Each structure stands twice: as C-alpha cells, then as structure tokens.
Length: 356
Image (cartoon, rainbow, N blue to C red):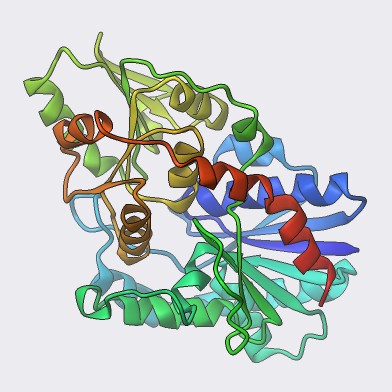
C-alpha cells in the first residue's frame, strides 16, 4: 500500500514517530510516497529528521503555539488571537495539502496530529481515507479518566484534537498501557512508536542528569539550580540555535542543540531525565528505565505528565527542581511491562494501517 504522511512539525515527538513508522512500513513492503510537515515560520525542523527519512519532504505553514514573553510556556491568549485573526493565511496551506493528497496516489493518509490535514478534509471532498495517530487521541477515549476540573484548558485541546481528525476513519492512540477499543469514537490504543535505535540501546546508570526543553526560557531554572549544586553534572538539550551546537557554561553544565543521536546516547547513560513532558521523550526514558521529572509547558504536556505520573514513571513540578528528581530517582523502579508493550508496536500498528 501507498501512504502519505502529514506531520505536525512543532517539537520533536511527531517527527520521530513518523520516522519510525516510515521505516516499519518500508521493511514490510509498503511505500511512503511523501511526508508533508506543517510548521510555523519561527520553528526550524531539526536536521536529524530531514536526514533520517527516505520519502521526499515538503513543508507548509501551519498553526502554532505562541510563546509568552519569557519563552517558557505558550501564551494561550496570544495563541488563540494569533491563529484566529491570522486564520486566512492558512487557507493556501489547506489547498496545498489537499492537492498533494489527490496527486500523490496514496491509498491512505496518516496524520500525525496536524490540524491543516483535518481542515483539508473539512473543506474539500477527499476520497483517500485518513488515519490519525498520536497520544492526544487517548484523551478522548471513554476510559481515560482525566479530572477535567483541574485542566480547564483541556476543552481547547479537545477542540484542536477533533480538528486534526475531521472524517478520520480511525484514531490510533499512543498509550503507556493497553486499553480496550473505544468503538464509539473509533479510538484504538496502540503502543508508543519508538525507533529501533532506542530499542537497541543498552542503558547504564551514570552520574549526570539529562534533560530536554523545547523553549529555551526554561534554561534559567536549570542555571539557578546549578549555581546551588555545582557538584552535579548536567547535560541539557534545547532549541536555541543562536547558541551553537554546544554551549558550555562550565565543567558541570552544558547545553546542546537538539541532535537526536547524541540526545539518545546521553539519555542511555544518565542517572535521571528532566523534560517539558513531550510524549516521545517520556516514552524513551521509561523504556530505558530512567526516572523522570516533568515540567509541562502547555495543556497537552500537562496531560502527558498527569498520565505518566499516574503510571508511576515520574513526578511533575512547576520548575526544573532537580533536587526532587534526585530524590525520586533513589526509589524508582523501572517499568518492565512497558518494554514488552512497546516491543509489540510494529505488529499492532501496521495491522491497523492495513485494515480500513
């Protein structure tokens, strides 16, 4: 079968998931005819993605989160205003996506949580079936017990999630654990899509703390903690392109520009992991047996963190308080059952993509 991928390009998770699925499909004799990536003008797609996929990649402008003044958490007000009043400028992207779907010859569109794909199906008659894949679809599952009163922004997240999946024939919800199929909403829980490089890692427990932050504004938290605990080695990855590939504060603190191979190598040897709670890196850390500190930067990550903490994978904080991570690491027990679940991902997901 021929597949066309449409990928949300904000952050690292959806990109790496599409890379993994492309390799799985190619290994099983299928074809990925193209990969379309939606991103804002401000966001640069990492080189590891463009270098790591086989299918031709095209880009289009898409809706995005707008950061607050401190470049930490997105401003929901700015995001809503920016995308609402600028909505007209995304119509050319909707047309581009529609035209690519029709001309690609694809049998199936696989949408990695990109809203423009949903809009293309909303405004155009498209005969090619669309399957959506992402952790966010789990939030709509009838058995996902989210305390909505604690997460008022989840209403907006529900809206955006449904927008990505207009006329989708099924939703493959990436989940930490197996769950029954939700036939009413066409939601099927499947294992996380982790790359072969992750599955082949041989983790060791080192002495340094490893971390990742999408918005560089969180680096101030890390540097303040470092000033009080200069004896603890810290290795953090960020998206601050202006700082170069490696920004060494001193012998114990280094910031690295996001590089996927180096990121995974350093994760495999760390004592513990701190993150803004993107789903993909949480799963990688759990698979490698690493305790996690999660500092969510928006509502999607807040729910990721809620789910991971409930699973026992980590703890949630408002800031990068690495002392709490060290304390948690002392009593953490790796999740062996998670590895078995992840190892079944290829068979379960391909089965769902082949049967419409």
